[in-house]
Length: 348
Image (cartoon, rainbow, N blue to C red; front, side, top):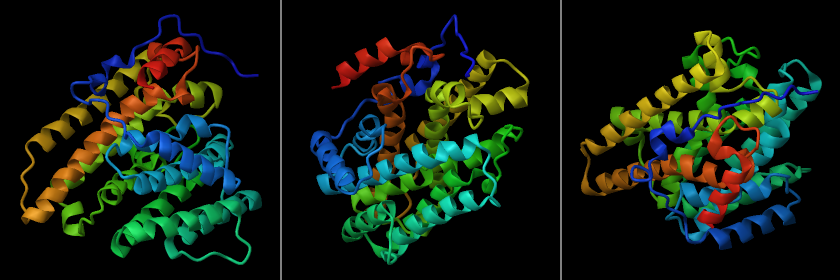
């Protein structure tokens, strides 16, 4: 039986700089309703529905507020396939401390790897699972909308993310959370899927940024800031769901408590400070960015950075609007159920 942790004085997420709507204004794709319908149809037809589907099937509309319907729908299908794997396999992988030597675990890892390979190659096996078929159909939609170079790079990021999700121990995770904060953040970025999520900005915009742009020092730093803001903020929102209810240890708060040898409130304060420092760095760098390429690439990079701003805004606004992280037992006042219900009505 789970031990319920009672928070007599709930904390506020408003200490996060990204809660300031002047800094990160809400922008929702106006095609969200139509996209929701098309994605739900895809999951029903391919027998891929899962319990949390309706809570997550609008995330892409926050992350990509300007995408056209075809690209927004493809992006949302990708995110929902990811949630499908995370909810059915990922949290379980963390909870039972997966061991790569277990035959059952290896079978699951092999299945997820086949899904990633299907997306990378566009080729199905003779007896594919429904999940493999889902990734194959998604690949066929996305390859029409982008370049082969981008798709190849993205497929590698997708595979790395999926394999880290299903087998976190292979990427350095320690079940008792006794790793450094820096090491945790590196693994968290992989499991969060933020590497591929940021790459989706190019798909959204219909552009391809060459490696010399992607790996430009300041662009790299902006990407890192965006990843950390999104991934680590999610650890705050999901704390009650995953740590208190799911009994997981894979969470920034737990790792900070271990490293700092402190209580919950002190760890939350440290998390706020860490995320806020990344937020300050991102907006300072983006404001002072020097565009050093030709006019076409400069324009693409400008829109790319704007796309990261949308993702930072979505980090706050989507997680505040979805019921996925709401609970009367949340340590954060904004996520107590009544407040979430009110916020959801305001947004929709």
